[in-house]
Length: 237
Image (cartoon, rainbow, N blue to C red; front, side, top):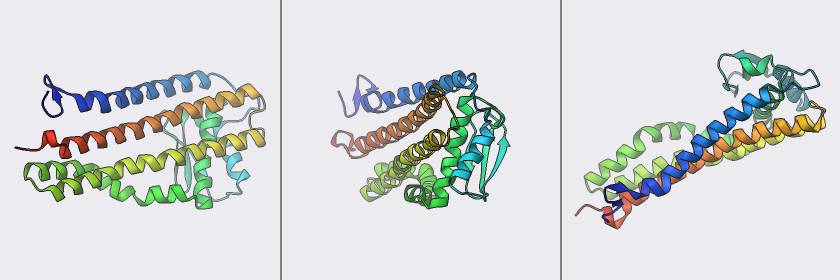
């Protein structure tokens, strides 16, 4: 045993990061599997994904957001800069319960912006720092380590921690958008059958797990870096 290594194996990676990465892979496989299954189940209201998004916007009294089609699969998103909900080809014109759930979720994001939802404003405020941190955080920490400049190590780790903070703030934003979507689906009867509602909720729950996995991965990666750069066993002799 030497520092973080045991017979040449980095135990911090095996114990901390690898389980989180496996969780991320499982979450991605799960969301694609659920989406495929629920995309084959048509709703009984005759509502397309585009119509569902517009119904949620109407529920919140939002009139300045457009709904457009975008290429790709699971590329659905709300663009606050242009006030446009972009729905993928498999969602925009689809009558599936998956399409209704996903489209309603994106409209939920539009509602967050319209209401000035605090977590999404806070998350967006750190996006520029997070983008910079992803490029220079770790290099700064390594530079400080090899030059034996501790303040530089801590600055690098602090910058990298912003990425974890971004994922931490993203989770409640996504969960809230799904909650808004499911509330409107239920109260406005966008899906009339209970089974359809449960199917839509299953799609959104599977999607939420990908954000949980991203948070876990970023948190464990940060913890590993802290151990590597500040652990006594790793300090240069």
